[in-house]
Image (spheres, rainbow, N blue to C red):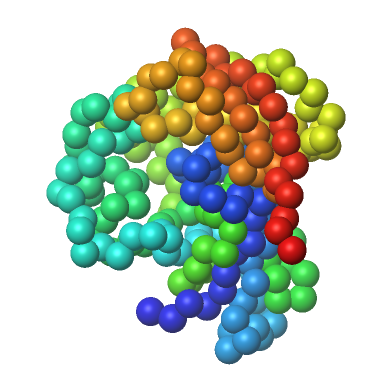
Length: 221
């Protein structure tokens, strides 16, 4: 498959990314098409849709060492499920599928929100989301139904002023999802999440996330 575009977001690393699209509504991105596909005619009519399906590549996974079972984070990381019953990136073909809100079109760039990809992720295809066929209200959700509303309580014990109010809101939404590896329960361990040029350092214990430092990441010239 050809890479038709790349998405640019404020998340430079995989750690801290939402595990599903839409769970952090304020995390935005810009889809920039490759020169071969930078044609406004290809977007004709897309402005009438509120959401889009985006098919993309999981970075760092090639499918050669896939496992038939994986440990879903929402089950604590200790219980194995079949890979085809999960959204794990470690699959035979490292393809991601996300529903994103289409906030606008600038030239041939797509402005989207609710993203769950890191900066520079390759995009393979884009399709409009159709409520009449893509939304199934009475669909069952398997084991995911028991964990979908699980969120951590986030607090700051440090100066958060380097972050704008909007950025602080996004950081809170990201940390509410508890980005730690689910099988690690180390309440004294300090984690660092790279967001928009800042390192967000935090600890997690008993369903509570405490941000202890917001530090600007210095670029090396």
